[in-house]
Length: 162
Image 1 (cartoon, rainbow, N blue to C red):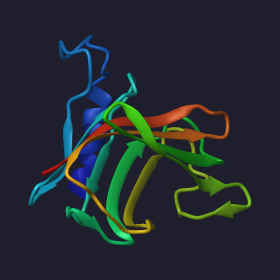
Image 2: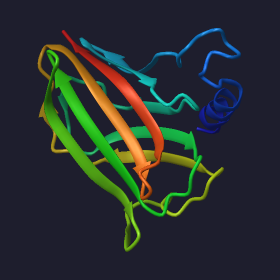
Image 3: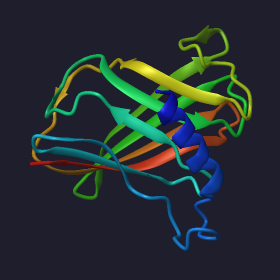
Image 4: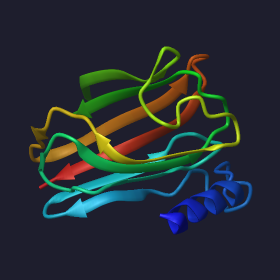
C-alpha cells in the first residue's frame, strides 16, 4: 500500500500531463482490472494530474460491495465531494449517476474534510447493487468535484467484455 502511494505521488509530481515534459499530450492509459474476458482501462482527463485506481474483483458479474483502491493528491479542499458517472454504449448515454460522497452534515468517509495538498486515499468497499456486465465495449466518464464544482479528478474509462 505504501509503495502504491509513493508511486502515485512521484508520478503526479513529475508528470504534468500537458506534454511539456514527457512529449505526450495526455496521461497514460492504466489498467484497473483484467481477467477472464473483462478488461477495465482508464485515463485521467484532468490536464493537471493523474491518479491511481484499481478494482479487487474483475468479473463479468459485479457483486455488491466491490472493493476498490483510489489515491490522489488534492488540489482543492473537500468540504463536500461528489461523483458523477455517465455510461455510454454505442455512442448513446444509457446511465447517469450522481452520488454525494462527502456532505457537510454527513461525512461518509474518513477523508471528508481534507485540505488542498493532502492525500485522498481510500481502500475498501464501494456500495453498488451488483449487476451483470454484458458483452460489448462501453465508455464510462467519471468526475469527482467539490462544492464549488471544481474538478478534483476525472477519468475516461473503457470497459471491454467478451
